Length: 328
Length: 260
Image (cartoon, rainbow over the protein chains, first blue to last red):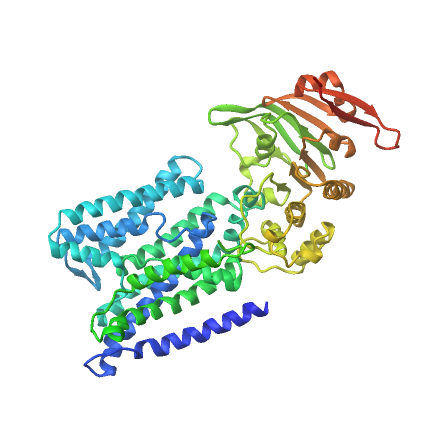
């Protein structure tokens, strides 16, 4: 219990430090005041929102599949969003509705279409078991990736570059339009997070196996479907705006499970806090890394850094793994 | 609590695994389900618990058809100890036993004293109080089995459904588990258990329901069941009947293996 409290206190302090400090770091020609409100603050908010949503939905997917290596993108949500976005780029579908670009809107539609399709396939194979859901999601994801490659092949160079950039994942949002675009995303994320919070005991039960969970009084099918939709909606909303930012949904729940234990009530809080610390910090490093290393003004998309860190994190975990470690 | 099943049929992958089984489980009764591997014992138990769709027949709990009851309503009356647990990543013993209270509290209601009393009682009954802060992965197989049983006991249901509760346990843990089941029977609970150890049915003085290829092959008191020719028909193996001198536990059967 003491460890839990200490961990939570440290997380809150780190979060405050992230909010206060990360927007201050960086080089720019303009005055900090100007840069702060139009560029850095919206970017910080977007990174916090995306980090929290991806971490929490990673946690949910890991519970639904009883597999600590499941991620928010395992079921092809990101694939659907990416495919729609690639189509938008290739066909030059531009335009802004309110603050949402046509591309982001289409990406969200693509994500949700995938979610429904995967659900329908899993449902049709009667039972909605986690293995059918997994197979359906992974296959749809593969199909999406294949079509994206095809679109890239058929694209002109600058379009292909735009698609690849989008696939890297970035939290770059600018100015008033950026703030406005975050409103619907945060509404969806708050709704999804609320549902995950409501399902926390059900997620604990799912970890014990479907039969045991049902025997304890859990409606397994309903819980799994609700968890799937809640996590997928959060992921879809974030990915539509930011692209698939890899590994956040894997690394953060892992660290939180180590600090706070496997109970999903506390874990959910930890994932929200951890995501809001991890992604803004990574983004701060990503946009300054080239400047620190080479004095260049090139800003890396945050997805590049999270992928690198994520890969190294799991490699480190594997090499350090002790026999009694329950985590991996 | 009483449970009645009429002509229960269950299909798995197009094959009838349970075929027309009827039974009644009266309050306070102990029923042992026995039969060869693949006879449909586990499937029957899951069907009685409403965990599987029926191809035909009906199961009624206190006179109400199982299909009309929610999982939570069922779980307040019948607790289930499955044969294998699939996963439990890093939970502490107490947290696992706590899940037994789900049917009483639901998704968000905080635990109250009734819950913590039920949890403490279940932990004490299973001798787990000193292990409650350990993670399940750190326990032995026998201790884990007691954790699952404690979770089922914390559910505080009038009936317990135990799928091979003593298999894969060493003699000491087996004895402890049998004692526990006897205590539960003593408090008036209904118990249905699946076992491969036929003598367990004699020790608990159960009614016996024998399944063979999904059909009911025998139902009756254990004294009648211990008939070597009947056992041969059901299990395709030779048994020898022994009478014990000690009072209370009169008969045992014992497998005879042909040599040479």
